[in-house]
Length: 278
Ligand SMILES: Cc1cc2nc3c(=O)[nH]c(=O)nc-3n(C[C@H](O)[C@H](O)[C@H](O)COP(=O)(O)O)c2cc1C
Image 1 (spheres, helix red, strand yellow):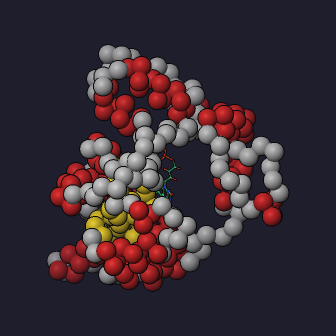
Image 2 (cartoon, rainbow, N blue to C red):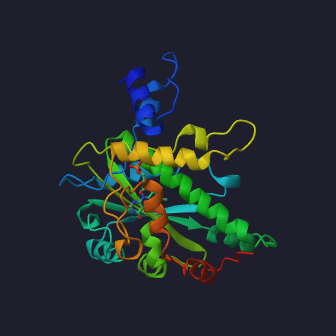
Image 3 (cartoon, rainbow, N blue to C red):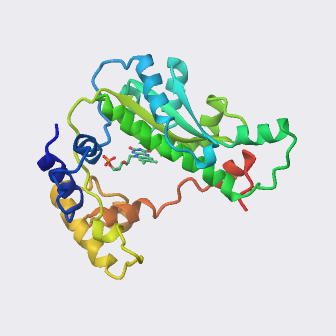
């Protein structure tokens, strides 16, 4: 692969304003694979070897972990009947039942509390940070799973929508107190090449020395236009409420998406799981 033009093409399409990478930079192949990331939601009708799923899980669990506490687990959903029930919790993801494999990445603060009991030590740290640390560890493993899957040619798509029905997912997977579903990950052999989804420009998201966002509105307007010229933002949401926009860019789509309540019960679910979110 080692083609700096390929890496530069991916970064330029992704950001619009990425400076070319020096062709003598080591690891160009690995950088190119990461830079060409895309989520896949359409898969070939070909199973994924369970041994390969275990292997990519092991690779992903090699990720760094806050204080080496290892507060994340992966549930590999193998039982077809269970899989149907979990898929049914995410009815908006109509492509999901055709995905050959499903993992669920969980945050897990349970083990830490257990060894405090076993070792007879107090736990004067029951506050928001415990949930945050477990969620962060889970997020890192999710990202590494995506990379591990793509390294072997698998395609995948994370599914935070599983948290819309967090309690039911938790019950189906037998998750005890202090263990919560962070995201699903649908995996399979990609049915097509997919596409690179443009991101906000580096001028918006990479800061030097001091955070700045004085130009952010113009930057997002520019991103909306650049992105729309590459891919449409899809079907307009909430047309009955907000009308049909002449120009329907990313920021309009995201504003409409979050103009309706979503997962308002998630905090209560996490508290019921035993987390004190103070
Ligand atoms: C934590 C997380 C949760 C996500 N949840 C969903 C989801 O529930 N459904 C879905 O279709 N895509 C989901 N995605 C995929 C994003 O929509 C996708 O990453 C984003 O649109 C950018 O596209 P790309 O990954 O192809 O670059 C999720 C991604 C992440 C990182």
